[in-house]
Image (cartoon, rainbow, N blue to C red; front, side, top):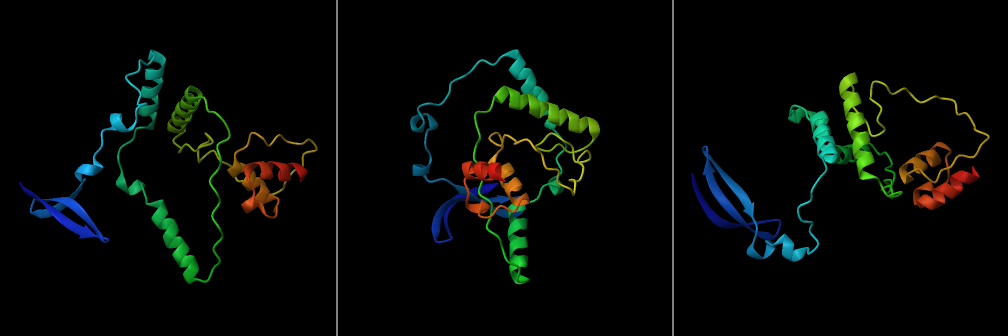
Length: 195
């Protein structure tokens, strides 16, 4: 295998690349300039050292890895960003109006990492047992039921403070709350409490 270092230009920027002849093909591998290579310990002084994990933590991590492991099938994965952009282009071509994207949900509080890991292991284990695909809510796709068409009003006020901004926005959309796309999480809680 022959190789050499060369410079190449792409997108009005100069790159350092390695040119290789492999298996009858010429390949280029992008390299870093010397000033782009930094020692993480010099850059971040608070890097953690070696930590001792308990047997329980190690067992749980191994169990999670085991339940989430699968055979690699490249066709099962798609570039969803590219698919969304293509869908937006098609919608624009068709003359459809494009709505503003929803803002990212704000964090709602501190998460107990061990509890989240335990719940993840349980969700992954239950989806393997039922043959379904686990979702963020822990329910499998096969067990999900369609939403009821009728809305039942509760006489008791619900505590909305524990919901994420995304969940609050869904509820605001369901009641057709005006101005919801520009509201903060706190604004959504107040407005939904009044409805």
